[in-house]
Image (cartoon, one colour):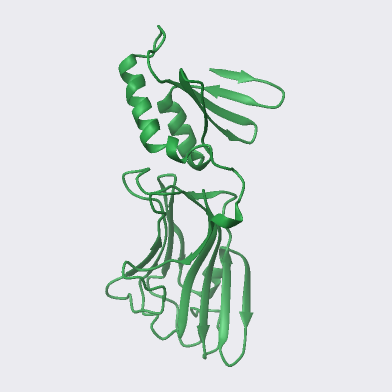
Length: 251
């Protein structure tokens, strides 16, 4: 059912439709609920839209919603959503998270040879919290000059055969490729800003343009975890240093 008012449109539904709508919009981390002792009234707000559903704690009133389905929904909500609901929807400085995308072995340096066996650098949230990514940067340092044209970052690296692959899985939706970077211009193409600093060590930073809200759901939310991933598929070992760094907040 849809209810309209001058300031808010409320969309009521069952738990299954609520969960699907919230997941599609990346709102898992802003779910709120009220417990009046009889039922959970669960809701999530996106601009002028408010998605709601009711899950009964004991007996379901007569209607088209079965007790069996309610109890399944209640178990799902209490186990997988209630512990993480009713959190602030604003950024909280004490919950800032900043790190690099890393291999399974813990290395953050993209300056590796992935031409034979691709090397994956990734971040996925743990089970304790969702993460909103607010910044993602690709950083490169080298004593060789930074180059554009048919070069990848350096004068000494020609157009890559396979390209540095950037991917994201958010809200259980995979975007692949987000970008395949074979030349320096491919980094700049998806950036909202970039810097080149020349000196004894030359430096390039590309700040990747992000959607307004890039939420990665905590481990266990989906069968396969959300992630931000960079895969090296060529020989980048001649770079002195390269890293994909992100910053965000825990939700």
